[in-house]
Image (cartoon, rainbow, N blue to C red):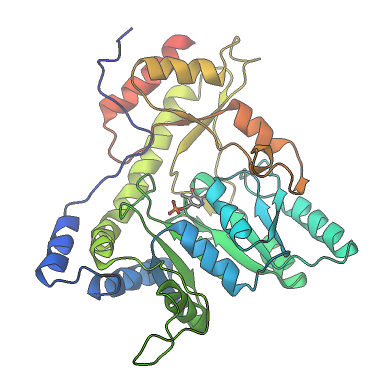
Length: 379
Ligand SMILES: *Cc1c(COP(=O)(O)O)cnc(C)c1O
């Protein structure tokens, strides 16, 4: 076996398109080195047009976008908010920033996202105790869309604000409509490992013009209109800088290519590894188009002749290839383990058996061959 001298293959690394640097230079030349500025406006316009949504506010992160969505949903101390358990902690942290109580909901099998029947069960149980949850944070994990109809229905029926965490799902669609545009709010992330990146950044999107205007106001320290500094609300420093928005403008130009390449990575792995006994992939449910941000495999060691997820991960690591277990569910996290949880057992199973393979849009065919070759040699 090759030692650690093999070149590193990352899980998902930044991939610039070429024009980003020109936009950044332009920001320098015009001295727009600030939050706000023409690149921020331009980037927001590109996001709106791409998603087919009325309004977008470019922010410092997906986490800050979630936080502002919860604030606008009226979530306050002691309130209840439903949240996918199978996700990254950033989906749940802002609920706790507000002093509210996350109620974690397990996954269903077809998309790995929140189980709508369990969500309904949780809401009915809370209502029976006189507690009315105010919002629902629905995550489209690994770019796979959650089938939307039941969530739209639940949120209408129980008057809850629907917040889509589409941090991993830019470019994914459900029945042809972009993820992040179904709910009252959609959240995007441009962190370094996402499908496109501004090095760090995020956006809050909505068809509600007032809500996005309010997000811009809150994200720039909530300054009242006055010549002096006057504040009648608590503000945040969450606005994206004009320099980083320049990177975003360049990245938006190559987003369709990035999605296509990630999907090709997924097809390649499926073709090479699909025939191995005990390895399975998540197919797109009817109506779903996934950006395939990360390709995930499940490893059933009863069918693979005893080869486990960890065996594969460690074997890849020895050849300098980064792979990761799927997200550890929130109800299993020490910091969240005391919060209410409605279980189907699926998220735990996915965590125990799942592995994310290198999925960057900058992987070469030789990289993909190396990864799948290493896995195949174990079988
Ligand atoms: C990355 C991510 C976030 C947070 O986005 P940041 O821009 O890193 O703050 C939120 N939710 C999910 C599911 C993510 O993957």
